[in-house]
Image (tube, rainbow, N blue to C red; front, side, top):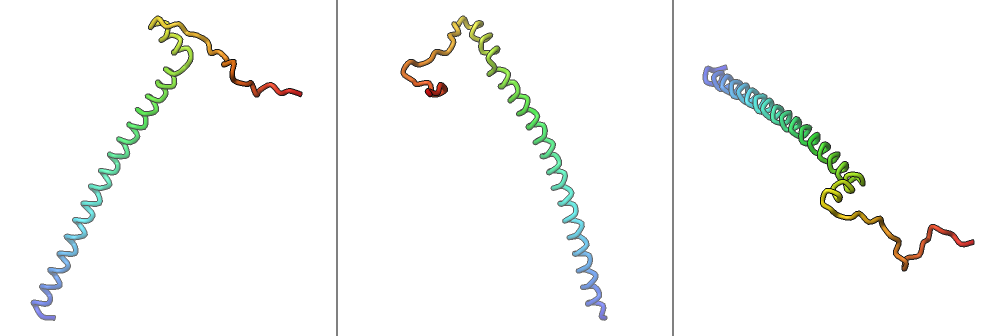
Length: 92
């Protein structure tokens, strides 16, 4: 093997080694970014669940009655519409 050919092979091996190091470094950065995004997703999911629970609590009948009373609104129970037939009763 001649000296120029040996230098070319050595240069190519160095380039391959540098490429491998660069790829592994980028892979580590991407893995770190994925881990941070996953943590952020977990935090946002917990926030969403908390807000959904609060919304469910606020939509409850007792809370609606309480808020209506605070606003001075009269709560009227639902009435049946006389024009609507009741299908729950079966006629024999």
